[in-house]
Amino acid sequence: MSTKTAQESRWVAAEAMDPAGGKNIDHLLARRLLGIEMSGIRQMFELAGGDSVNLGLGEPDFDPPANVAKALEAAVAGGNNSYGPTLGLPELRRAISERVKNFRGEDVSPDNIIVTAGATQALMLIGQTFIDHGDEVLVPNPGFVLYGPQARICGGFPIPYSCGHKTDYLPDPDEIRRLITPRTKLLYVNTPSNPTGACMPRSLIQELSDLAHEEDIIVVADEVYDIMSYDKPHQSFLAHGDNIIWVNSFSKTYAMTGWRLGCLATKTSYVKAIEKMHYHTIACPPTPLQWAAVEALNGPQDAVDAMIEQFKARRDVIVQRINEIPGFECNNPGGAFYAFPRYQHDIKSKEFALRLAAEGLICSPGTAFGTLGEHHLRFSYAASISELERGMDILKRVAAEIPFREKKAKKRKVTA
Ligand SMILES: Cc1ncc(COP(=O)(O)O)c(C=O)c1O
Image (cartoon, rainbow, N blue to C red; front, side, top):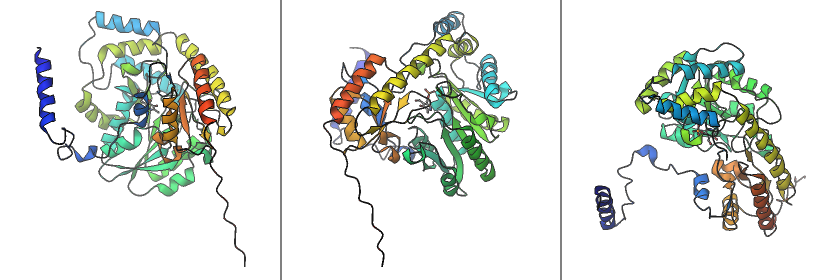
């Protein structure tokens, strides 16, 4: 028996002797973890059977471009396997700064860039650097699943602002203004959006940036889907205002979710503060992967262009198929790779998603992204067109078995 197995079996035995089965460890846990759940998207993924159509997860179904994979092999074989600078390799920070320059419309120094372990770590670093106990942060509802829990882990309170169907899935600056208090530190924005695919127009970005400037709050602009903007060029918060931390990732653009590489761009004073947290979290981002990322940015982009073309074609197919189903309504998502339809059926989104999972279609319940996601489902179209067609056949069949909600009668005005 190997040492590892012996160790595991002692753990198993110890937990078996515990009347709570080793589950009652709350008294040992850091308070910041209490009440934090795993994401509702992962839970659905775990239900996926062998031949299910999986439209649940947010990752491209492509491989990283061949030249980038080769650059990784070459970096490892060439001995680039040591620790590197905390903020990232200068060559990669330079390549990212060129990209940032295009959005910002002016030269950007590599000193304003930090390379991270995915956008996930970039977001956590921002939370750890700026959120103090009791601070408030504004997060979209529905919005990406990490913002709220990360803010709570950092001791803050996430305050949701609406991005629901009533405002075409876009934020309303007047509502955000009303939600700002002296404790508000950060405003999280995400364009194109996960889960809705909504893209913010330039005028809205300008308005939100001005508001953040007036109120002295930092805009955390998550633009990991920037390249996946299908109808109009991506509008970036980088072009508007200075009190912004721009977050991006190699995960989606280069189909390398498992490589865990992301970045952020911001002003130098913020870089210096975040650097301390970064050092104490991961010391430095992974060296060979960064060399591959240099190739990703500086090498040919044809694999990315081909991927975007495919996503656009798939979007058109899935949106059309969803809108043909009675009781379903799907806005044309301008970006990312998600359709987020609203439905009139008399069933909560979690129950609907479970019922679809039982019938072989995995998707995410709208409420995994916030309360305003109720009566919505999120379908990722990172799957082949034939899989999308198969999935939509299942959706159509299951939806036909569920009655519509009764419309609430409007309250009559009583006149004297
Ligand atoms: C809006 C958004 N931000 C950030 C991330 C995290 O990306 P990464 O893989 O770079 O950690 C995701 C991943 O799904 C996302 O959808």
